[in-house]
Length: 253
Image (cartoon, rainbow, N blue to C red; front, side, top):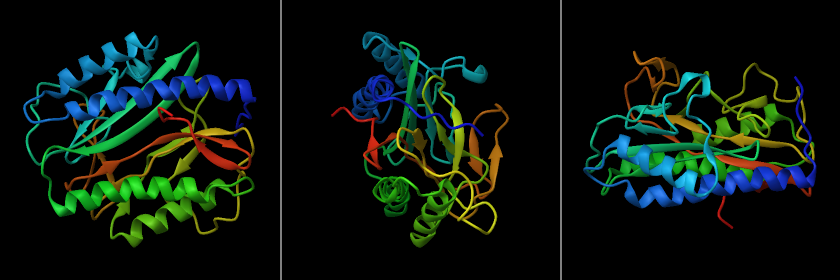
């Protein structure tokens, strides 16, 4: 495993791409309303990214057909936009990558459509809060496995479980780089493996299931659900280690 250490000027370039991701998410979020199709959300998002001077990084990546990933209800990640019209009570995950001048940013959020159930709100809150908890505890010298362990404990403390088999990742010159950052501890010892260092840039993305974390890929070969068939949620930020702490790059600020 080779984890890149980025120079401050490189982090600024990743931040520019990540800022475009945040702007696109903020642009699309109020449009997640009843009767809009997920295909229309994709069209609007792709056009907005182009206007920002970026490229929708997921379009064509590993063969994925669209620039915006739109995951509805039981689809936790990798939903392909189609003609489905959103309705009141749905939960919608938007996952966006942007490339600008050869550098990448990535972030995701889950949004409720109109009034949603208390359970669904708790599900969304868990993924967001787990992400922000991770941001708050990351520090130089911490092991990635320790981070995974802490994320898992947080998720389980809320009564949910992490999706297994999928993970956060490094990012920079490619949309996915080392390391893989699980939302659960693999093995029994968190005190092993690579450490977080100044200048590393990576994405943390809690993916939450209700009862079972065992993943199932649907017939389209992309959409991922839990074997329990229940709804999921997903939040993600691109982070850089600056002054020994995690700095969120995927923000408009």
